[in-house]
Image (cartoon, rainbow, N blue to C red):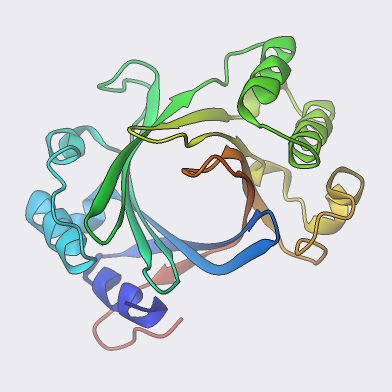
Length: 243
């Protein structure tokens, strides 16, 4: 599957959606061309369960039973795509304040071929500043990625109230993957606004509008950093699937 095929599958979503791109850095590897499409759960109507299962099946998922029982409690759904020789596809459920699983804001399945893993995104936005930085030191394994993330968080904390800066802890079943996700969308920042924090981190020195950042340990134990950027609205239709 390629990007065009991924977007054709999501054309069954009804109404306005958001599309966001990202770039991931891990060692010497820079992975671009990654997509995240977000929509309110009502975009799956009529027949939300059937629509959700059909989309996931067409994206290559063999089993989404881990998510289906919680679909009716989700406020939003998200679908992700990472290109490559064997692409990765993802399906997320987003929950409001009354999550069906304690402290979990997102629940996701991510699959490459027949390898499918459940990911839980725990809300850590209530942590005080000291505890946040302790979590950064515990989760992000090495420099310069750890310092880039910490410097970005310090800049955000100097620009807005701490409780408004959303922080998630991500854990994946059956792997070493563990990461933090920091939401910066409300600041309206572009890359130039974070030049001091990002320093010379390769691949990120441009004018991208920042949505959120993630950093941590990948499935193989490698450190990674991901920048999500330039979210914009899109409406899928059978008559016009171009973006």
